[in-house]
Image 1: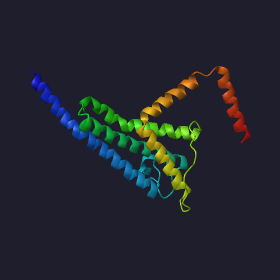
Image 2: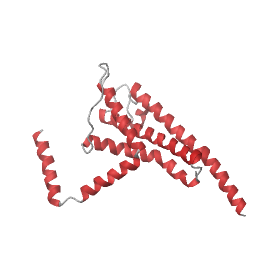
Image 3: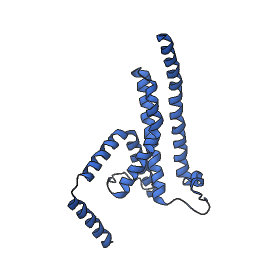
Image 4: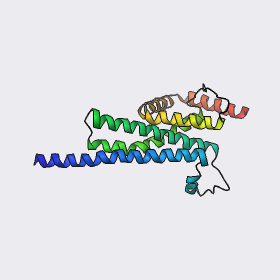
Length: 195
């Protein structure tokens, strides 16, 4: 009886060990294709999702940068998925069918993290400095998309670090006193009035 259960578990695990890398390859190749489409055609291949015609309209710059951030997070997730699968399967020899849900949900988590890191960058909650080396012929728009792609990739690969920072940020927001919250709101309103 125990041998039959063990045989069933091994056959399921063999199927999963084929399914996981196939899934990772599919979303990785789709991400790379969409990334190249974004650089060449400005994501015109997905305009149908929002009923936009490529002849009459383009995406607003924030949406364009958001898509690059989310694609970067998805590619960072793919790197993490490939290295994790290799570690579980080849090095630790501890791959289990229980890991399947993590591998399946990872791209969705990466897209959400890409969206949140973009929102944090745009809102000023996270500030990056521009220390890039300029070659003289680099388009500033291309440099910006590479920056969003890179920060998305880093946050998608290090999703656990991002979640911890998000917890710290939410704890800081939740622990402020009502007077501090009012002072922050007044400060923001004053800055908006000055504009």
